[in-house]
Length: 128
Length: 162
Image (cartoon, rainbow over all chains, first blue to last red; front, side, top):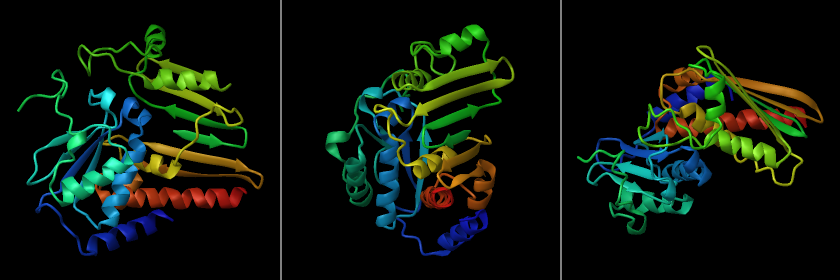
């Protein structure tokens, strides 16, 4: 594939009908990709999100890779921000949990209870 | 970043034009419990380099870090692909796509070279060119296309060197 072909595929993709989920705003998926995250499988988790969202034809998603979020013991960690749901940080998100998050949190707007991370490190996460 | 692979070894060379380190800082950077404290106050982070060093040592590989204050740093890690305990390479196209999609306004160049029975070949990509072609590197579609793009480059590479 050349850069020109890449550009053409991008343009074709943008013209295709979007399936927007969860309102007009983009859904934000933030994946911790520090050494701790990567060692725990964050690359596979990110890849699983990409595959699952594509298979469900969900397009309005921004995926951000960030460094260590300070939850090394719960990696891979993933934060989901979207309309109609509170901002949630999930811990121990393996590929299977990533698929659950797409089905349950993003599509059905139900929390994936067992993976909700409810005690953020106070020195890093500012309270709202 | 240069990723150079033949049947015996996989060599990763990462060079930056950042702040660089003096000799004392260079030694401390290899310590998992050292952090300059600027980005994360009161916390100690930095397992990346120690892990690479440990892995190369355990598997009969090779590691070198050199730096010049104010000019930049070069890290070279050579992994012995013949050693039983060398970790698998993983899915390189996804890794390269993720690497290029890392946030920020930096430039990054990746050179990937493969030497097989049929000879040697390589490809080179610049983050700025990918960004220009895709418009954004952070949305789902661009991440998907990046992965496809690197996958096609890898397939071609394997094809011409086999």
